[in-house]
Length: 184
Image (tube, rainbow, N blue to C red; front, side, top):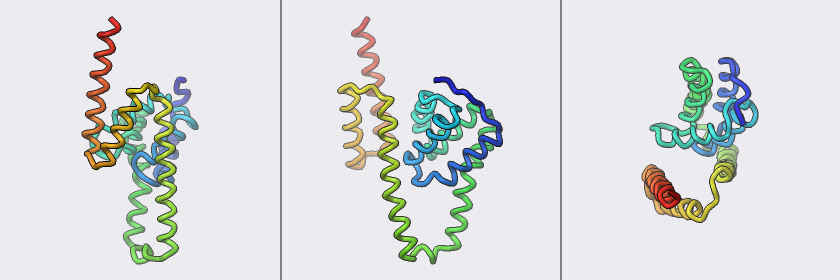
């Protein structure tokens, strides 16, 4: 699949503002929503390009979703796209924080507490969707499954996620080098 459209700055602003408004859960929970907008609905990048941007953004400092969106905006519209995209995706959250800061007394209301608990449950569902979507693009060999299970276990026991990602990358590189030598 090749990207079929390059958005105008206005289109970029509209889609990124939508992501900023509706992208609840943060982190990887929002990636499925971002993918549905920029890959499936608007065809701005290919699934492979999106996956590569997610992988590279995981190594950059800061929130992965913001980094992914910034990378896509820059790829599509250059520096102007980067500025417009980043501003439009962060602006709704900034406004929401300002409003919530003024309404902290309301947060103890049982209705609001219940709604927030419901949102937490929805975020778990979004995370499962992200894992499933990313898993579809991974070769399903024994070693891949083993690395995923070990990485999950190391995360569960509290090892730093950055260390897990770097270790998995080094392992994959060594595996690739070993396979290249045995084939030649």
